[in-house]
Length: 295
Image (cartoon, rainbow, N blue to C red; front, side):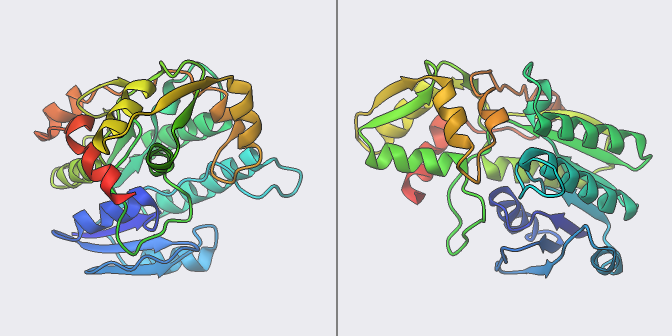
């Protein structure tokens, strides 16, 4: 099967391409950060440009795996960073739908958050457009993807678990939002890639799935497991959410609106996905040593 993968140079995208290339002809699209992996063909593409979309059409893919998404973008034409990102996401979905091919779309558990955010609204809009398109599709909503760094690959946006892992490696005190009791159900990036490959092997079911790991953990519990993996003790320091929100205004990979909702649980029950594919996710505990060794 010939696959076009948007966001192929991201952390999740590069891992997916590496896994999918074992079985498929993978064409990874990137905008500014090249990807160089064995058995993968990469293409510098801006999906907002009609001539670039025509180049993708000429690849004649059997399916599109849409992993590209922007959370923040440079403000322009009176739009904020978050509003600019929403516009880019809309334009990318325009291009993906115009290809007229089956689509696997990586959404987010943020669609369930009670706190409204531009990013969440953008994900919900994308999901609805895909559902209304008449194309075969599968929507996956992953909770906190994590996994090892790929050798010789430096994604443009820093993966949050790698940032946390470096803190646990080097800082005796690890700051957390609020009390650190918010729960996540982290899914290993290879498990996420594997389940997409399994879905592509069948007729896409045209439905949405939650994609979580085998266990739900609080931030405190995850930090404890990471510290234990390297034989260290770490103090968890709860800080007011407002401090993280202000810091996110200055950091390119963080959105203040998302940070304002960071104390919400982000769970994703994988049961329906397991039943549909026969896939079984691993636990965070079983993969934490691999994560810490790579960071």
